Image (cartoon, rainbow, N blue to C red; front, side, top):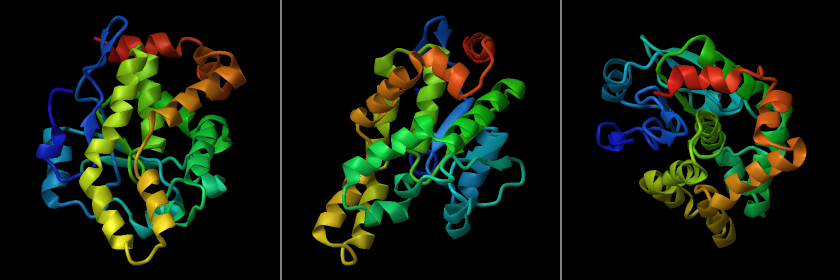
Length: 252
């Protein structure tokens, strides 16, 4: 992660999760990019993703309603796929709309991570995402609205499967708070005269991540499935050889 892509593009919360040391080497760079939404991005940014990063596919983890309101910008050279991870998430849905109406944001955030671990849509979606990565290895970018929860958990899964240490997984996860600082300030300013002080404070919390949220997800995995390996097998329905296959392809 030596390249700071925020200086090369205006896309919010974009980074390469490769280069992190793992058990048998390091995760391949310039292969797995994560970001916030790709709505209304500039022609420069589109060209950057297509011609500089050579991305071949976009995975959009948002709900159809989110996409309808703020669709990704069109690309000519990059394939697009929507994988809705929270089709029945209710208040656990970490969309901007839900962030502005919640009265108990901490509880909502834990509900969101419960849904990401145990929800049928999330389990099916992460299965699809992960299986496509080993069936068709290519440079990709994956995102949701803010690139912090649905995307953050996806990045954590990839890093853990690759064999990254917990500290490195949490480091990448928490980088979102700095990467989203300006974007979050703009959102808070936009809602400053529309929300009560309590809801505005809740929105500020919900626009960031906490180590506790990801730790809660991993704790839930151990409680419900006994281990991360069992979670991959039983919840995500991945083959027993998945971890070794993934590492053979992406760890160098």
